[in-house]
Length: 234
Image (tube, rainbow, N blue to C red):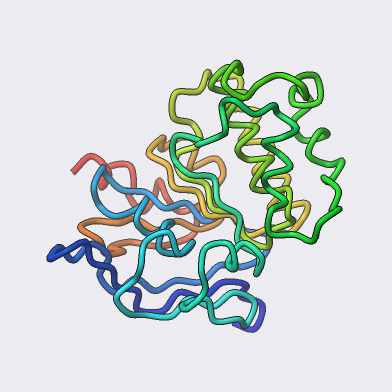
């Protein structure tokens, strides 16, 4: 479709002799949340790392807003419009909240200002600007990691297990932010997650992976009727 922001075509990836991603193809629409589900070890995290160029792919095409990303390094993909929140957050524990956020601007010209919206989305970060990242709670660190990925103004946001180790009230806050970014601001979001209820609440479309392949896909509203929860338990 003409308004697709990200297109992935026949993506393959290997670790040594192991074939991890097997011919993945899908597309993202602006303003939609795509959830990627599956049991541990099916290739979900490898998919996000492949999109970001953190791990090399064997073959396939990744196109963002008409720009071919296959040969670009990770920082160039960020500059092209990909934002990435890795599993485990990976903030800089010795840097302050503000310094962590400014690291998100590394791909932007010198002097670029942090968007004020970051502190509107995550008010707790405004209150803790001078606190070191390592002194924040897990939920606060997750909000910081998401804000850092949003700092350069991405077109597509990739989130890897954002609810992992997070208290329920912060999970709700993060869910509201994800909905706002997609449905109100037009960002395309890819959410890798194992928490079914969180996915079902947010998904505009879903992709279910097994053994490095997409074995089911559909609209988020159809997840229950399609038996996705049952398939996750197999």
